[in-house]
Length: 358
Image: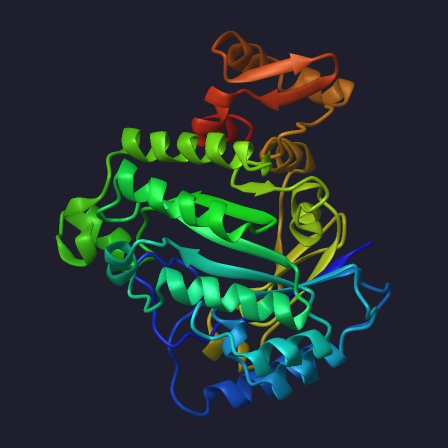
């Protein structure tokens, strides 16, 4: 069954590492955005009842509870199998947590990134490890047992010792799901631009090397596995039965409908995208079709999963050259008719995926 993604791009501040289409906007923009978002959802022709909902951003946890409940009330299918709210530490209160549950939320993804104060400060965030711990208690008390914690390997000033401290906090807090991302360096974030231009702001000159970042990721894989959190996708780890139902739709190429600025949709065959900027979204627009080769996409997306993919005969033939080469290089392994990344292949996954894109 399909899922629904709702984009809420508003933040109290723009984090230095963030390369998403989100940020701080003029007063009054949020009200106009919520009106436009509600109108988009209301005019959608629901040919199916969604089974998952995911509110991302931005910081959707900063949305007034009444507004969030009003948006969710427009989406059919409640109670959904899973309804996730992305949450910034420092925005959880007992009242908000209870309101989220009443609105249908049963899963929260906390954008922690680090539990080490010096690293947190350089990102522009204002939480502490103690705030995260207290807010997890509030969420659980309100009835939200499914909690994901995001971590980033490669933040400025990060060391093996500081990374171990963050992993120790994971062990202490016991979430059922953890996402571990390696820092992306590109022009779309302030930190990325600083690194690419050789600047020093935001701790750009104190960033771990690529090799150290890879080592930190491998440390996380081992530590999380010891805690029972198995890797089921390159960046995602969960207790058995606790993988993100919604995000699995992306990796299994199942349908989903996206609402709001920069939201994407997929009906199982065609893809389309809403305007990236909030100002464009508030104007007059039409969704833009996104063309992708289904063969390429299945390899590019499906190989992210630890379970791998089962290529069809025509796919083995179409990609026979790169498959054989990567198997010889130890980046892919074939187990019967299943193809998956090796541990080394995970670390070089971008290079592998590039070969399946023409």
